[in-house]
Length: 262
Image (cartoon, rainbow, N blue to C red):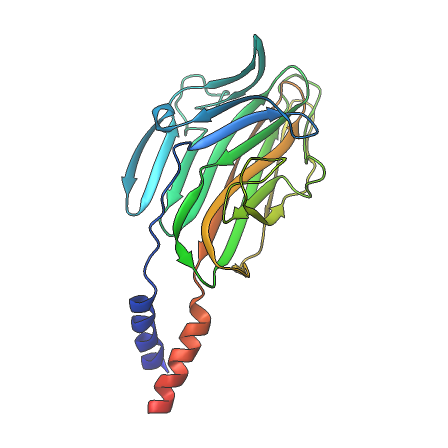
């Protein structure tokens, strides 16, 4: 049996090449929206906003400086390059991106709300790759909500979405959450996430321990976060969306063929 698995895996690697992902010019878009999804202010960040490098099939990006999201002269929110509780920048960067050739999309972020309750929308780059015929997907997200104005803090979902972290396939999010034609695959972390007075609270969610069949051929992916944060409070977190081929079915077939020949 061990020889069968080893032989089948060798053939499997030969017939399923690793994907090579490409990103769009916009690496991350951050918007402040109203309840109907209309954008009040946004920033589209390209490579000039980040320091970055490519290593081992992964594109790494780190935000260089805080980004203010404005509507005219009004500050709607702030995307942080470093933890705002660490003014000496001695800790880990707050906003980073990873786009893997496998393909995978990873986003770490930190945002401070404006002077009113704020709806944030973060949209990843549109990552394209050679079509995967029988893909499996896996998504996870974790957020931390911190009270910064001594009255508690809450992160909540934006209706009619059922969660705060969305994974899309075959395009960017469609209206009213974008201008793309992608299909929503999973929507996780319903919340709410509530921090006590002067405190922090964390919550996470995942599609499961094991990858799940997506149910259609996939040639691109994108991720989006949509949530409401109470005024002047801080939210940070990370999201991950991974797409993989289906090795199990082919592996069983190859093992069966090998056993028959024996």
